[in-house]
Length: 153
Image (cartoon, rainbow, N blue to C red; front, side, top):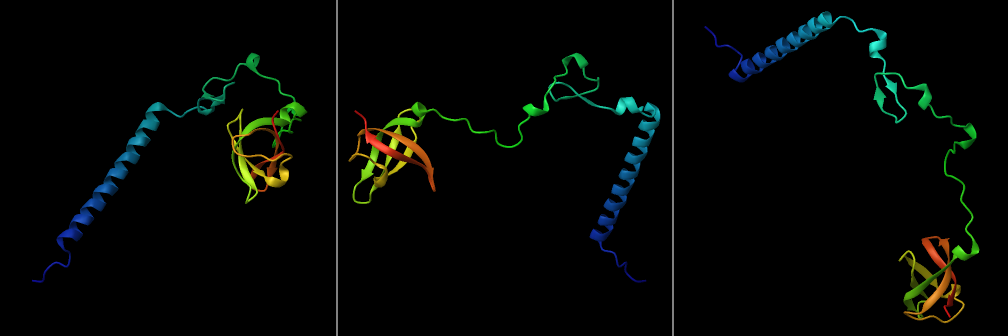
């Protein structure tokens, strides 16, 4: 007599595969039985509605709570930029650091506590560290930059 070509691990894998297949078949039959017991769902039972808050519900929304929206009020994309008045453009701050050899420094805005770059060409007066200054902000290539910098009197 010859030996079986199947090893112990092959037999175990085959048993697991058969067991998985049997469990899958049993689950399928169980779902089929549950579906038959509950009966077929009607179309109305399958519908979902969205309420005024954007949540899914089973009941239809109340028409009294419906909001009217005009097509002109819908803004697609970035809303238009509001014009800033002259008083709001001028800011106050103090010079955190300024290097006269290199010709640049940084100003700390008193309102926002933001560091803003300042170049020597954008200053009206000679400034040094810890000076109180007034300035305007423009967006430069690398971020906000102070222009029209002058000593605060």
